[in-house]
Image (cartoon, rainbow, N blue to C red; front, side, top):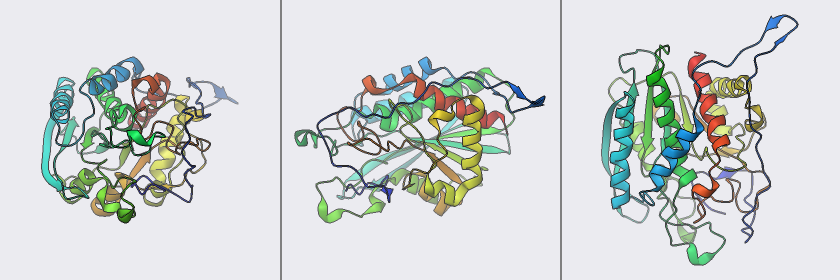
Length: 339
């Protein structure tokens, strides 16, 4: 069993198989605006999330190649992410740090902090990681294990959804809260599967989030945070995650209710998908910011409970679904505009 921080506790990984197919399929959502017994129910609010735009932002990151730490592609993508958030009206600052990988490698890391409506006292944090895994160590073909992952879903999709939300916020002046988009670096340099002696070393993952959680911008204390991890995959569904429920149950309920109201409840089942350790854990534990994780759970997928492309060379644009991007993006917009 892989010891990555994203391990689902109590939900055993299935053994790797050569078949790439996974049976989980999501349903396209719609709006719910009807009334029942003359009593109005909650209605969709906020601007319309554009999945074509989010898809293009995902592809733009992949065009740089795998954004592996200490690579030219990583540096070029950093500049691009910063430029996009600035283009859409955010004030951007970076948090630079030399972080140590599990193998002693010095990782030149950059957390990107983009703030919409920076003067607003009431703030919400959205976050995702933007680096790529350097090893496709969950690929069914062991000859691919030392190849880098393109990370279209496991990295680029979350950042793309945030950039599209920033674009929508700039075009709509009605939101009264401030939103901080945090792009965590060095999330995916965790212990590879072949390092059996290192298995269980949870601190080797989410290094950028760990650093951020202990080095917050002065006075920074948003009401809550939402982590977006692998939010563009084919057939994805987002179950309620156990650690999120432990630290921020009310935010979990808020998000899942927003998904129902926006018409995407089929993507957000009310069942629990296990306890997943991810970037949100140090944010909760060290920074005391109640933060939840929107992350897929593929209950019947043999390759991985994180989906068939997770940590494989097949995490590419061919397996990004605009409907999944839409379901997550519109749900987050619903949350923001329902505050």
